Amino acid sequence: MDASFNEGEKGPKESSLSVTANAQKDVEAGEDQQLHRGLQSYHLQFLAIGGTVGTGLFLGSGEALATAGPVGCLIAFIFVGAIIYSIMTSLGEMATFIPVAGSFTVYASRFVDRSLGFAMGWIYWFSWSVTFALELVAAGVIIQYWNASLSIGIFIAVFWVVFTALNFLPIRYFGAFEMWFSSIKVITILGFIIFAICIDAGVGQNGYLGFHAWGNPGPFAESVVTGASGKFVGFWSVLVTAGFSYQGAELVGIGAGEAHDPAKSVPQAIRWTFWGIFFLFIATIFFIGLLVPSDTPELLIGTTNASASPLVIAANLAGVRVLPHIINAVLLTAVLSAANSNVYSGSRILVGLASERNAPAFLTRTNRLGTPYFAVAVTSAVGLLAFLNLSQNGGEVFDWLLNITAIAGFITWACISVCHLRFMKALKARGIPRAELPYAAPLQPYLTWFGLFFCVLILLTNGFTVFIEWKTSDFFAAYVSLILFLVLLVGHKLVYRSWPVKIADVDLDRDRVEH
Image (cartoon, rainbow, N blue to C red; front, side, top):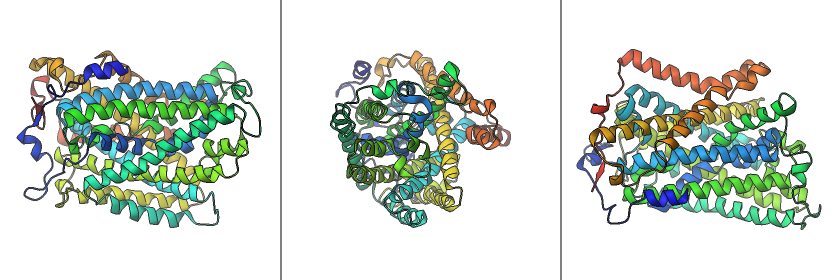
């Protein structure tokens, strides 16, 4: 697969591109201010890592392990990783050809239907803005590991102010800050992998472990029902958790509108981001499954206590007393880094929506530093929902937000695949050969169809356990994002009476890069 990436990426001479004059107008601010192209390839990579590696991997993976077992959980993360590969290559092809703020929400309006761009953009913005609240809650929960008497509300307020302020900085400073913040996550996971190898080999208090946890309690866990059906139910239900964990990898495309030389930097970022995230996730899930038995009771309290992080549990089981505190400190930086990326991505989606007339025009305005301050403020304001966790049912709020944002991610990925299929059809109609693209996605159109099919399938079946044991709140948690998406799509069509864009009318010129 890596070879396919290399084949798809053009050399320096082939990628000698210039942005058309129209691209300078993709975001307006007063007379002449706009987003600045201050992000390098490594900034895009760390931005995506910062948005991806967070609550889902460090906290949600514990409950996933208990639900599906070590092998079931590992297969689920590998499977969703394959879907992400499809999505990122599809997005990369479009983002290098038309690098614009808002990325795929803009493509949906131009290539498919304005109503789709409207619904997709708002559901994606909703997802990231709510995820910001989710990460703020997670930060407070993690700090409570050291002192449970402290109110989560204190930390929600402090971190909300800090990350709102950071997102008003010029993009080059924001990118540098996110790079260093994300580096801590990468170093931590690499350190955990080394630690896990040592413990599994017999360094810990339990001696040599090997694959003991795969045999007892077993490679797969039963969920809802017993037998083979229960094991499959456990595996399939964990796909949503895996999807939430991977959500953020597509931020490479979001940052294309502010990337320096996107034809060169975006393909590089896609290649390194996918393989980097995939390795970090799969290695972490694999070693967690070796060190922590899936029937460990602490795994099932992941929504209310950071001590349920499988990384912390692994250290406790090994008898390394100081390590849980170190890991918990790094978990805090990981979650805060993700929160920082959340505000960035949500604000740029609002800019993209506004540039396509799917949101109020004032959201495109930037200050002299290139910061879309109205978009940042609106996105950040949603983070105040984190204070809902101060209620008695804080754990239930965490569960609801996790489900809502995870499914919104699958909706977005499905729409990206649809946009890419239309993009390829428009290229063919215009007589533009794929060999001339700055970056050509591999295995097309089959890889895109693969991603679309399974995103839709997971979307429709993610709440199937509700129909085995009915619970109304679980039903709405599983399908509220899909319902909201359909309401936005149909509502926009009824109000504006928009029609799908004809292939001959697809706009491939505005904001595009040319040889």
